[in-house]
Amino acid sequence: MPLSLQSKGVSRRSGLLVKQIKKLKQQQYNWVIGHNPGALYPVYFGAKHFNAQAAFDVEDYHPGEGNNPGEQRLTKLLMNELLPKLDYVSFASPLMKKKHIEDCGKEGKNWTVVLNFFAADDFKKLPTGTNNNDLLKLVWFSQNINYKRGLEQVIPALDAYKDKIELTLIGNMKEEFYKEYVAPRPHIKIIPPQEQKALHHLMGNFDIGLAIEPGKDKNNFIALANKLITYFQSGLYILASDTPAHIDFLKTFPQHGMAVNLEKENVPSALNKLLLSAKEIQENKNTRMAASAAYSWEKNRKNCCNYGTIQAHKKNYYYFAAFSAIKSYCGTPGTLFCPAFAFLWLGAYYSNGA
Picture 1 (tube, one colour):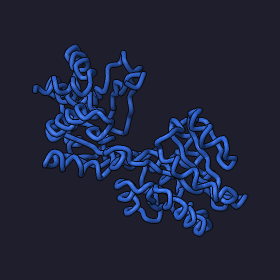
Picture 2 (tube, rainbow, N blue to C red):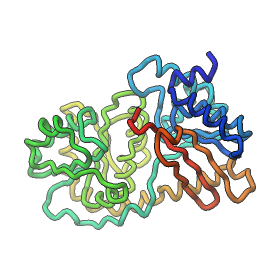
Picture 3 (spheres, rainbow, N blue to C red):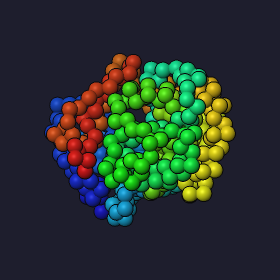
Picture 4 (cartoon, one colour):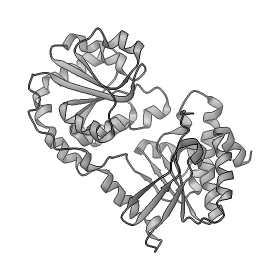
C-alpha cells in the first residue's frame, strides 16, 4: 500500500495537509516538523517538497493508543517505515524510544529523549513546614476528574486515614464521579482547572503528588504523564502507579517517590509508609526541588538547539514548519522562539478533539 494511502488510513487529516503543503509554492523552510500520526507522512512529503530536513516529536506511543486494532496496525507500519528516514526524532520517555527501536529493528539518526520539563520560573521555592494542621496533603490534577484514572483505587483506601490525609483534586469534576466518590468524603477538596503557571505555583501547598495512571493501554505503560514531571519539578514526593515508565523514572530519581501496584491490598500499605515518613517527606521538599532544578525546559531547549543535525546550519535563524494540522481546523498558529531559532507551528488538533 502506498504511504500516502496508508497515512490517510491513520488520519484523514493527512491528505488535507499534503494538499496544503503543495500550495506553499512561494515558501521555503529549512525544517518540517510534525507531532502526531496524521502529520508524519506530510512531514516526510513536505521535507522532500521543500528540499528541507524532517523531524518528528513522539510524545506518545501512538501504535498503542486506543482500541482500534486496524488503526493501531497501520500506525505502527507507517511509523516503522518513516521514523528511520527522518533527520531528527525526539521521544518523550526513554522506554518510548526503546520500544520504537524494537519496532523498527534499528535506531534512526539523531534519535533522542526529550522529557517534557516545564520552565524553571513556573516553580517558586517551596518552604518547609508549610503544613500547619498535621495533615499529609495529597494532590492529583487533570483536565477532567473522572473514572479510569486510578482514583477509584486510591480514594476508597483514604477513608481509613481521613483524619490524617487530605486529598485535593484539580480539574473539571464529572458529575457521576462526584456523586459516587467525592460527595460522601469531606476530606477530599476540589479546585477548578488552573492555567499552567498558576497550577504549578499551587503545588507548593502539598506534600505528595499522585501519578496513578492505571496502565490502560500500551502507551500508558511507557509514557510519562505531565503531572509526574510537574510534581518532580515542584519538589513533591511522588506516589506513582507501577507502570514500567514510572518504575524506570523512580529508579533514576529514587529520592523523589515510590511506585505502588494499584490492587486494593497494596494501596493501604503504601499510605501507611507515607504516614510513617510524613515528617521526612515534608522536610525534604527543598532538597528534592534543588535536585530537580537541574532539569527544566530551559536546559532541554539548549540541548535541542545545540543538537548536531541542527547546529550544522550556519544561518542566524531557522524556520520550522510544523504541519500537525491545517489552520482552519485548529485555530491560530503560533511561533516559539529560543536564542537562535524561530519555530513556526501551524496547530495540532481539531477543535472537537477528533
